[in-house]
Image (cartoon, rainbow, N blue to C red):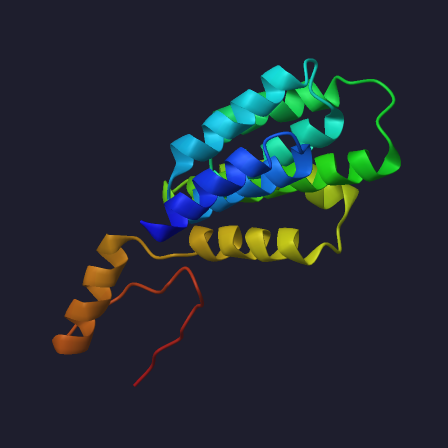
Length: 178
């Protein structure tokens, strides 16, 4: 297709420029050709051995965009082990770690483990309690934890459609006379 032809041509022309090659890799993923994007990052990392922190951060962003959690975690750990990161690099690393934690928490919520989602988000919320993205993810976990079980839903439906008697004595005491 035309977009693939254009990207192959751009890759040939811009292969010597790291920033342009990175943009092309993101474009490959954007059109759904993840393998060409990954191959281009692999070429870049081999050509720039050892890869720069900037290249590693962009690769981590690429993995984050695609949701490749295990590879992203490995890349973030490798970046975190580099001494003397600049303040901008530390911010970028923290943002990528936060993004990965939010995605992991969302997966934990979907699997029914809202408590684990809270644990995943807790260190990030402790560090930045007012961060909106984290608060929204935590709100999703709280909402998921409050969802009724299927049995309660069936009980509710049966009560609406027919008649039910509930024992609510734990909630209050009644004195019925007469």
